[in-house]
Image (cartoon, rainbow, N blue to C red; front, side, top):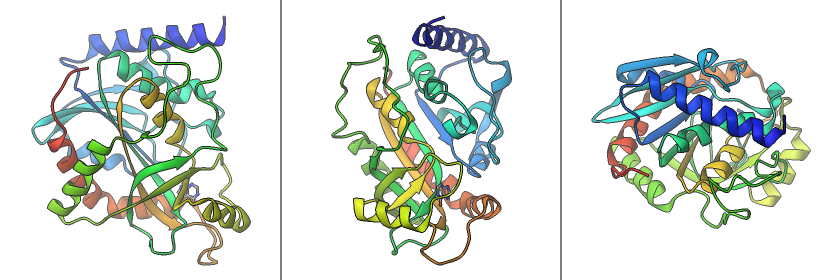
Length: 281
Ligand code: HPA
């Protein structure tokens, strides 16, 4: 079957399945990155759907990605959280990695909150810092919108001047002040992985204007924006990027640091969610 037609069918079957499994569809979706899954344990009155049972969904194979879709209350608001996402480095086609975003849109969800673990390039950052993504550099990202345009979601050439919602970003800045969790701001650059970057690559990214580097988020943000969703993205700086401190990088440290900040991260996310205006797509 044609790649795009197959993608369309997968979106429709996944959305249909999720609708039958949840009492009510929230209007906020949260994608939890490496080691940030514990936010889902702060949710109340949860309904859980394993990815393996959702038609069209791939399997989560990355460390720290449980592969569960969890609906639950974050304070007074209900959210749909992905505990783990799909990456191209796992061998997936980019359409499989953005499928959940289009499923959320099909379900009527208008707010997309993306989170990830990332390497810090800005020397002002340190391990454990949080960074609000104000913009991204996707030169090395797989092209999420190549092929026939899915015009039911958005235009052929969507504008990316404001890929990340100003409105949601301002809510995040205020929320960080309210809960007393520092939120840095910067530009995220996509690196395909699965290897971490070389110091020369990091110097190049720095010269391009990047503050943090990671292996996800850009395709999902592009798909969300294409579909007219409000997109917010936050990176947890789990390590300084290659060559900055001279220390070698490893995935255990990434998971350890993201777990360590997960308490502040969860409080920040809950406060952000509480302040998102309620509105159906
Ligand atoms: N590079 C790319 N992805 C990452 C990093 C990094 O240094 N840390 C966590 N995810």
